[in-house]
Image 1 (cartoon, rainbow, N blue to C red):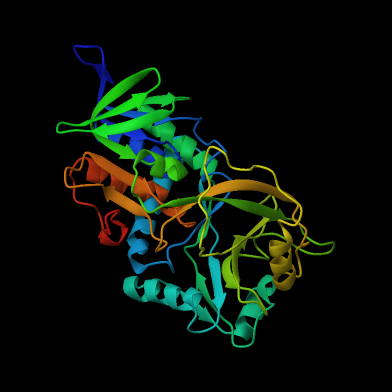
Image 2 (cartoon, helix red, strand yellow):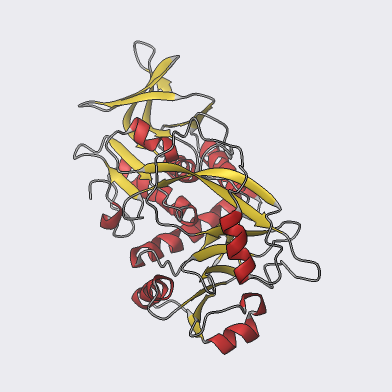
Length: 382
């Protein structure tokens, strides 16, 4: 990053927020030889937003939208590239199971993605599910399963740190512990304002997670608090990921579905409820970090109904901030025709698997490259 004649810091692109998407955007921009400054109010891999919690699910057969499949494929390539650069395992491909009634969103969404992109998804009836996956043998009559052999588990904190390190190695300037107060686009670029000074850039990528609506008003994004939960095995039970493979599935006898995976080596099983809202907006700077009495009753009931191998009382709990859009899809793209400000966020509970590729898309849009896949369904102006 250089200074202009009046001492103002100048960059080709400023990236605001170095979490899931922003860390990769900074890396992919710097890898293009651009002068990049990445700005993060905390430290990379911090626990105060929506990109922590030890693991995140990775899926290629994305039930949320068939257009996400090529993004997941590109993300996998980039996660592997970061693994090679960092020397750390970031993505463990274990395979995963989707379970529900024929015609349900879980089943039909996964089948639509598989059909659109010729994915190797295998359909299992209830008997085959019980035989091959006994940890998932509690089923409703008529349930079916779809096995996605390309699914797996990501390590979010390590992935973010690896992307920031790769950005720095490619020449990016990384500024941490600095809070952005405003982003002001104009005819020739944009000014990113801090308490102690400004950064001037030709383009700005804003990937500030739950803080995105504060910095770019008008986006239909609702930040809200959620609780993440981990579970240990019952006495005599087996909580391992081999016994309870990665899953998104319906809950027997309930109008509900859950997601998670069995325990990786040295860890606990992770299970969470799926919910579509409506959500009440929370201030990401004032999130209640305490877990309150009665707050885990719902997940205890769902785990008890589904997994005979798990102790239904959570063994560990923590809070997280999600940022939902009305249609459950992300927002990736310029905010207006000038293209001075590109936003990337609106996680809606399923973005981390795609984060490296969403960073790539944000980088492409910031330098007027055509995106590697069709992303009209992610346009923030939709």
